[in-house]
Amino acid sequence: MAVAAKKQVTTADAVRARLKGGKVDVKGIVFESLLLLALLLSLAILVSLLVEVVSGGAGVLRERGMDFLTGNLSVVTALTAGIGQGIYGSLMLILIVAVVAFPLGIGAAIYLEEYAPDTRFTRFVNVNIRNLAGVPSIVYGLLGLSIFVQMLGSVTGGKSLLTGGLTLAVLVLPIVIITSAEALRAVPSSIREAGFGVGATPWQVIRSHVLPSAAPGILTGTVLSIARALGETAPLLVVGAVTGFLATGGANFIEQLQGKFTSLPTIIYRWSTLPNASFREQLTPAAIIVLLAVTLLANATAIILRNRYERKW
Image (cartoon, rainbow, N blue to C red; front, side):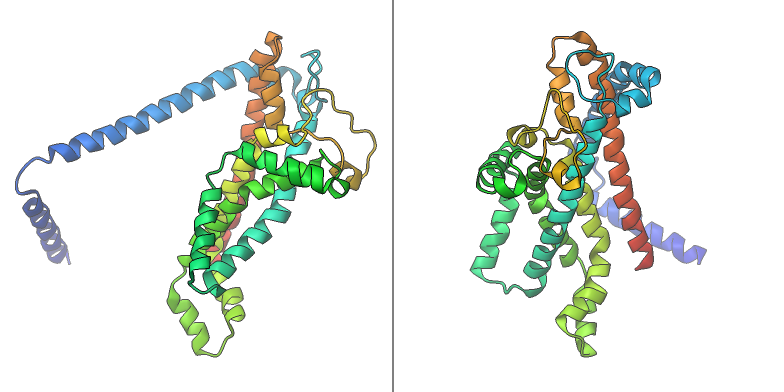
């Protein structure tokens, strides 16, 4: 075995040397060095930003703790301002996105990959879905303003939490469709052929074999969509996110869905524009730290679910 392995390594080295022709690949070395430089530069920028944010916001989290995490939104005094309403609003928005965008996106991907024939219309739909994934988020905000606020205002409550969630759901829907379709396309055709060979229907093959095999890739798409939805600000401002005082009262769940709302990115944006230095230099970095923590928690949950599917299948 050792002799065979040694002979294989020797053969590989000989082939590699033959391809290089005994010359130094200067262009390859330069290209590799540029890639490494780009990686190090990106990491340096990321680390510097994280250091600045943590150094500015750690004091607030250490001194105020739960008071900051549960306090109400304010733009008047930095001593009592908190992000409790923003955390609740962001989590509710993500819940609406999950309920609306994920079933629609995964269902559309299944139809396009497993049922729709390869026609000019299907290719046209696929191209437009990929184009929609690159549309600026402010455009989706205007779409939500015209449809969910003006046309369907009697149902959504106008500029409400439900409107914000539906707008974000439409925003991330192309991402969910694209990633789910890629995951379904990556499933080997032999799995489908084996199911059809034993007499299973297309739905039985998709439900019992294709979807479980594609689940890790689909959950990766949910991670990307959750991360984008959590960080969006512009569309929420367009559809009525509150940036100042927000009174919730004793409203029930339905009334909260049709009532005013705010989110962590909205609070960060608003505080960063205030003339008060305490808001800009202390509370804003602290809110950014919490937003990063919430995003990492949501992503970690999706990654854990993905790994469980990978081990199971």
